[in-house]
Amino acid sequence: MSQTDWEVSPGVVKQAYTFNGIVPGPTIKVNEGDQVRVIVQNDLPEHTAVHWHGMQLPNAQDGVPDITQPHIMPGKTYTYEWTAKSTGTHWYHSHMGGGQVGRGLYGALLVTPTLGDIAADKHYTIEIGDGSNGFTFNGKSYPATVPLTAAVNQKVHVRLIGTGPEMIHPMHLHGVPFQVVAQDGNKLASPYTVDTLNVGVGQTYDIVFQPKEPGKWLLHCHIFSHSEGPNGMIGLVTIVNVTP
Ligand SMILES: [Cu+2]
Image (tube, rainbow, N blue to C red; front, side, top):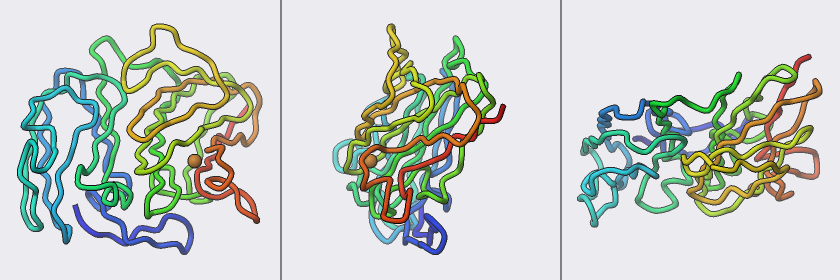
């Protein structure tokens, strides 16, 4: 973990806190039952700890400073080790104040179930942020957000992760409704179909959809001040580029 200059959109540079120099931190993707070991080196100017959100693990690995472990002081390292039991879409984050999370100390934690992942042609992850880096998808604000791409009728799977640290974002897709198939890593017995889904801080949702028409379709937060400015779209917006 270190302090890093991070460009969220062209010309807009934030003093971020990062895992491995990037926002979000690297996606950790493992299989159910894998042994996971993460060595955290704290090169920040302040103390911290890392929580494995949604993981069923031994208390000593839970990453809550003062409660389950000592603070990781600046210049020190700490090793976490646990077995991946909880499957699906989860995330990890600093557990030392929302300020650290808002500056970029979070990342996706994806555990593929032994019985197989959600079937789709395309898989994407969108980590929604609203801290001091601004309104970001995967650490970038529109127009710097990375578009999703798919062909008509392809099945697109998007993992939505609300990293906060402060707000609920109603995520809205243009063109077709989407199906909510899992929440917080747990597959839903009865998936449901909506146009807009509130994603709260700490929540994850897996959604799937099949574009029906080619073109540039928006996927965005529907709170207008998070996604539209006087000169057009900003912040929590990405494009789904659908080819014929
Ligand atoms: Cu929003």
